[in-house]
Structure formats: C-alpha cells, structure tokens
Image 1: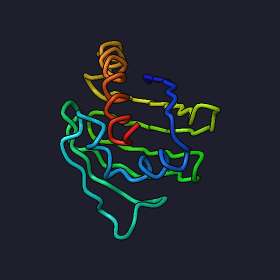
Image 2 (image 1 turned 180 degrees about the vertical axis):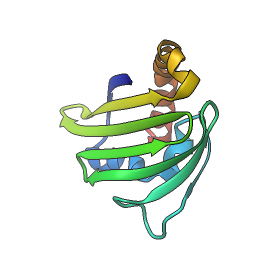
Image 3 (image 1 turned 45 degrees about the vertical axis):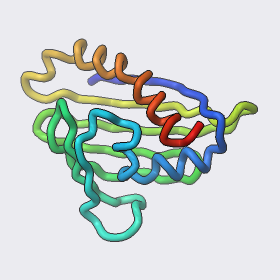
Length: 140
C-alpha cells in the first residue's frame, strides 16, 4: 500500500474549496492525468454517487463518493484491475484561508505492485502542478 499525505493552504474559505472538490466533474480542471469523467448515477454529486473516470496511467476507474461532510471532509474510493485507491480531503479554516490535508492510499495490483516506489515518486512529483492548477481553477 502506498500512502501519500500532502497539506496545502489556499487563501479562500473552506466552503469554496469543498464545493469545488465535492463535485468530481471539476477534477479535469486541476488534474492533468484525468482524460475523462462521467457520472453514472442520477442527480447532483452526493454521498454514494458513482463515476467512471479514465486516467492516463491507470485507465478506467470506477469511483464512489464515500464521504461528504460540508465543509470539513470529502472521501472517494475507486478501483479497477490495476489499482485500488482511497482519496480524502480534510478542510480546516486558518487565519490565511484554508488548510487542506490530502491523503491518498493507493494499492497497486498484479505486476504494478512491484513498482510501488516508482508510483509513489511519480505521484508525489506531480502534486505541485496539481496544486497550481487547483489554485488557478479556484481563481486564487
């Protein structure tokens, strides 16, 4: 299992960041590894909503929004033949905006499990660009 923790501070209210990240359809605006995403359940994104995403490195991924506690906590889980993953975002107001604690648990399957170190390194290396893109998408 690969665990990646990252904290960033954004100069806006937790509700603004939460509302943006709580809708997985916004992910293409900040994650350049995402090729496409579509919601497979009806209605607005809410706890239990399901999505199918296509990522550059891991292909199609079935994703479920597992936790939605506005404006404090969002969690997703997803899996396919190559990986299982859990992603969560925790939001805490600060004097300068909002601290966002990100946690990614990634479990490579099959032959990919032999490349855990490289996967963690590549994922971690890509975080600054994703943070910059998230700031741009939020207009901060």
